[in-house]
Image (cartoon, rainbow, N blue to C red; front, side, top):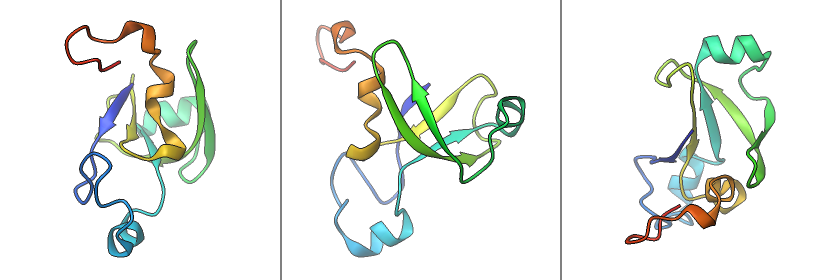
Length: 99
């Protein structure tokens, strides 16, 4: 899973409340390769529950062939889809603190 997927208009948490940008990107998405989605019976626009042993979140699906077939990509910086909940904080990098 990639949890640092940046959207062009947003950097970190900045610019999230600017209406023009929110209209361009109104919701968080989980991107998945078409073949992986088909094998799991997932369709674009469907909400799924993404879960690891550390946590879970519900998120809308977008189909994209820009994602590896064995991975998913979650958009960055949206509290309602905070992918850090899926990583587990006990495995943070000792220097940066990133999960």
